[in-house]
Amino acid sequence: MKSSFTALVIFAALLTLFGAPAALSASDHADPALPAEFDPSLVKEPNITGLFVFPKDDQLVLIYNVFRSLSSPAPYELDQYEFVIYMDLHSKINYDDAQVNARYGGHVVHPEGISPDVTITIGLDDQAQLASKKVDGLQNAESIRWYAGVRDDPFIFTPFFGVNVVSMVMSIPLSSFPAGQQDWILWGVTRKKGKTEILDHIGRGLRTQLPRFGFINTLPPSQHVQAIDKEAHKSGDLRKFLMAYVAPATNLFDDTFAIRYYDMEPDVCIYTSRYPVRYPNGRTLEDDIAQIACDFGDCILKELAVGVGKIWPRPTVNDKPLPPDFPYLAEPWPDKAPAPAKKGPNPQLVIRLVLIGAVLLVLLNFYLLWRGWRCCRKLKEAGLA
Image 1 (cartoon, rainbow, N blue to C red):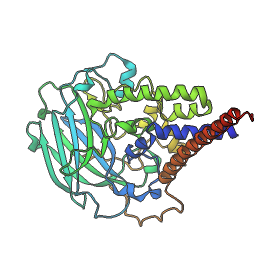
Image 2 (cartoon, rainbow, N blue to C red):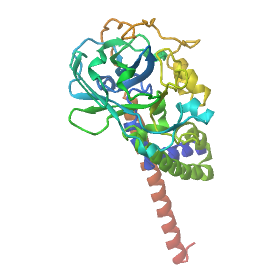
Image 3 (cartoon, one colour):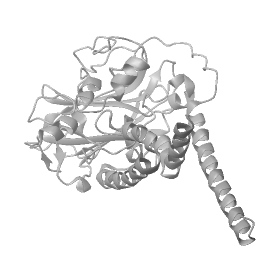
Image 4 (tube, rainbow, N blue to C red):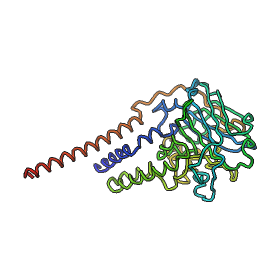
């Protein structure tokens, strides 16, 4: 028991020293890591909850959702932010590897060259209505059909059932893109108006919800693979140390933070008209990404849906029927009175305090060992030991 506790303490200390707090603070606030009632401030931040991309007749539909677990009426704190969707129409995508296709929708041959050919910048007012829109890189942008407002959260994930999101929907004529365009690379960011710093990022759904990817959440996609490779080497060294000295903590590290061999891809949403649309080839509102992602190894959503959602069998469709026509999202749930905050400390604060305390405890142990070693050496020099 004592050795296991010591292992966990050292593990926590190492995570602190190797950058885990950065992962905690930089992770996507839309992630279901903490229930909203524990930290209401997260709900006030318009972080990204979903990016959907799918064809509809002669249109390409984009749905960009923010503001998780929304159940209160307007006004909302939205007018100080910008919501941006980028499209890369030039980067080459390889579809020869079935495993890569199943996880990412394709392989970006030169990820360091990812850059936007199309930029859509959206501003909302405090009623969640469209306040401004700017489109760069598309022909006939005036033909785009727009919607902004509060709608049911279409995420098929039980802890997010019965709540709303702020949705931005665009139906773009395929004729707005270059003739013969077959491949799209898309991603979205949230940022403060007039600023370039990325507050939140989304590419392929679920990617930055995984704890091991918190560090890429504020980077542009062109830097993702290099950052992941660097993290893989760093985490590999840490794992070797754990195996040698703190073996009981290795499984915890492997499950949560270890970089996998298949992670060396940028976090973008790839959509191609070459194959039928289905996550991760784009993402439709009906896609059960929890099951699809679990099929190729990332099962966190399925575990949380059953454990946190406390529903079995796990629902595999949205909690409201989806309309077939624009804007394709179900009507919002009625406003609710704010739930009383749960008693007890904020779990995120507790985690940080535990990590800091663990580091201090480890440093204290080293200090005591050093004092003991000095004392023994002095006794030997005095001929008393």
